[in-house]
Image (cartoon, rainbow, N blue to C red; front, side, top):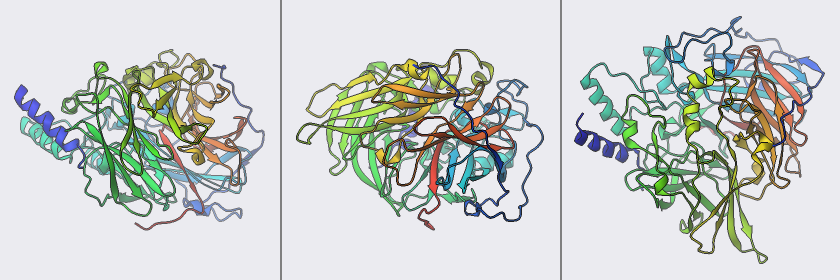
Length: 569
């Protein structure tokens, strides 16, 4: 393709993608009580104190079965189960419980993430390429029932039917059979039809009880049934805001849903909100980028009680990289340090920008929380926003290649990370601050995959739950509770295990911020998998609910209480 055609193609892609409008780690003590739960049906509501007849349960195979991999080598005996494809499309059954689960823990924990990284003998490149696997643990009466199932996206169904990648994933693209086939792929990229709907990133419960799995393509918003794990269908937005990509992590409360839609034509972001019970996003305002040549990546963003914060990183979307058959080390992005780094603050009520400040360079996947700082008279004088910050180092993206994760276990190659704290003044100052909230050695210089008490979203808070590190390691391998007031951390670690995001569930009626439990799915060194329940205060192990097979690593979680609202749409 000529340079002129490539330039035109890049512009078309841009048009398609724009919107319209430490302390050392320690192993917590394990409970001594072992109790096998009575087998239950898949539906969460079936977990009862009475023991019903055992349903037919699909037994997992005796040992993992992995297809040989074209990239990254075959899965060997020393390869961690965290980086192996799930062994079957779905499973359901009772879980054996070690310890004592709190009787107040009554609901369903869901975890989403990539769980299938190969098609036949073809192995995917990157952690983020895998087809979505939804894992569920339902708790009731001190018992636990587990299940997993592949999300039935169009990308997954097409790959299963044809035995090859049919949509553009994070680093994988369909292989054209001819030049004309390649031209056809470009045309479908411009329209967005070739972009994946593989919703392998987040899972959220809306205020009306609907559960949505998400990724960074808007078409990858898929509704699921949390009781059966059935794919209900696409979550169709009924507005005319357009766009093909959005933040993978909307902010969801009981009453509303906030999201950002990047605009690659006129570099900027549309801020939108959606009322509970509807599918219609409403335009709130627009932020024009201060740097270029494209918007900074917005995987996540924070809000406060009255404001939306829009981050603008020097890690920026790159249309021409979307056209490449082979990925660059930064995949669909480029690093433009010279373009500057900024934080924008928009008023929720008016959509007006009340602050736009330059800040030191930063790289973050995940913001933790933000809140308003007030003066003696109650006027907001600044915004404080915390994130899992990678010291402005983009190397973390390429460290997540599956070959790297499988081959560098035990090597100290995980890039350093910290809790980065922004302070954004609202007095017209042109600059904001970015500091380290606590000594990164407290959490092993690893920090990502975070949650807080949901009652404190957008408000002042003290505790965050995240994944940290015990060195040497090539991936976060601890769970950590960060105290942002005392500037300390408590850590849980089990040798050779890979825990996923700890999700905090507050105890009903609790008045203290850390009164509850943190739940994490763990891929163990011995090839097993279990849901770990830690005390939110002491961060010691309360119980673990053990799956009868190994679980691949997953990304993000949500909690679905048993008495949730239910919505048919």
